[in-house]
Length: 267
Image (cartoon, rainbow, N blue to C red; front, side, top):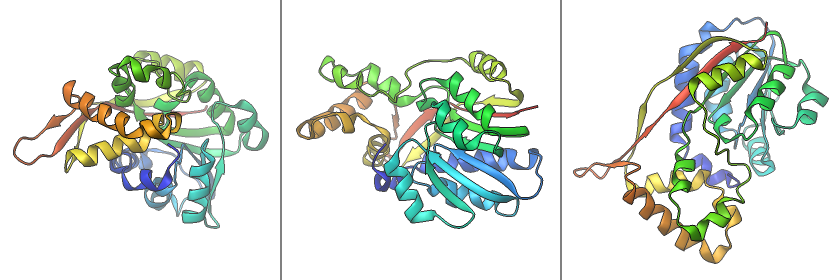
């Protein structure tokens, strides 16, 4: 995910999930005045600016969006930075990053469609706990099953050597109970954890493929001359494995996915 422009054009599902989670939970959180808020995995900043910020603008002193991708953070700064909303590079898995500047610095931490990309989820949760003030809350929305990881499992042997090089891809699978135990072990008291199968409709197959490409870091690992052939293989694999439903009358593409939202507090 190193192409901010492509991501911004193709992140409709991420935008919808953030809005749904905030609509359901924002008023269930305990707010004081002038709060410091962190958004982990802000990407190019559009969700932070256009969806999260409007929910918070009357409640906060500052909103900081962080992402491990320098390209994404620079795009976010240039596109959405303002006095009460800033963007910085930070790797949530790196305790030094989190401890040096942000220890006990935030009242709230949000994260949308980021946690399923993280390798070391437990250490990341420990770092979130470190960055929260006592009584601080987290709201994390992510995928219980990552469709891109499922797609990689079906890839021909030719591409497996490159898949192994996608280091930031978390291929670990956790059940809801596993995750609950992980959050509690990291020091959080879970207020609510919910998941349900949802669907997202793309207007056509090309739009679906564009959304896949926007989050597929294989393109960063593949030699340029293999990009077109890889894209064809992705398209063929999605069809062959029936990973989406294609409406025969309209050509619309229906993707089923399983998001999970966790609202927890640091006592």
